[in-house]
Amino acid sequence: MRRLARRARESGWGALSSRASYNSPMVQQRTLKSIMRAVGVGLHSGQRVELTMRPAPPDTGIVFRRVDLPSPVEIAVSATAVSDARMASTISVDGDPGAPKVQTIEHLMSACSGLGIDNLVIDITADEVPILDGSAASFVFLLQSAGIVKQDAPKRFMRILRPVEVREGEGASLKWARLDPFEGYKLAFEIEFDHPAVDQTGQRVEFDMGSGQYKREIARARTFGFTKDVELMRSRGLTLGGSMDNAIVIDDRRVLNAGGLRYDDEFVKHKILDAIGDMWVLGHPLLAAYSAYKSGHALNNQLLRKVLADGSNYEVVTFDDASDAPAGFADLAPAW
Image 1 (cartoon, one colour):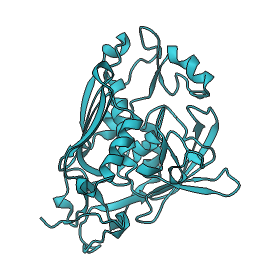
Image 2 (spheres, one colour):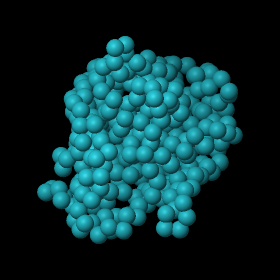
Image 3 (cartoon, rainbow, N blue to C red):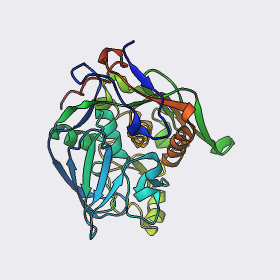
């Protein structure tokens, strides 16, 4: 196999070099072709926010710039930058909860993962990514409308070498998330809410990212919430921007949205969507099988931190011949 596979060293991701010729059909990094702007409201803050997504050079990663502050502040996306994961994935400078932050990044990160976007600078005028329609589909549309281009640099993958798992609780409160070695990237998620509206839908989903079906099968799944929780959350300054335009709303018995569900198993598919976004904060696509039971943002981040804590858990690889990469990883997703 004509593949460069070198273990990541203490000096970090950037130290990995490639002998691949840029004229060879390697699997390449990706960024946007042009600038794209979006306006919306934050799910939790209810604030109007503008996003400007810009192309970025190879090896930049995904970086948010808080341009609403007296001096713009850059916040690079990484597993250790996550400073709060209770209701959403929030990143801050150096992971410091008291530093400038950006909340609710997971749907945009999921879209970037689904389209394989490695490098992106995102100017943002508030501390929360707009919720748009509550799924990743709007972000997919915006990113593809800007155009996605390959760059003359090898895409770096994180290959999981041995099982890594995190668990929380016992019995009925048990939750877990796990990564296993797999030459590709697939996800399996199971939910259990003990609620009639949710119980009528699919409780478990498996999805292979190499299938090329992210836009069709996952991206449109919306976030969801229960009316019984709304008043309490709003008293805490949360979900101030939430509505039936950007979330599935459920009372004690049924879904209240007039249009119903977009998928028969939309609830669990949204959990997969979130997990894809939570995993993308690594800044590199995984070669792994992710599986989870009742996991959420916090447990997903704990899983990534456990992986990174031991260098024998993974290696960072590039493919200097695209034919050696798992199916679907070298091709751009079809445009809308």
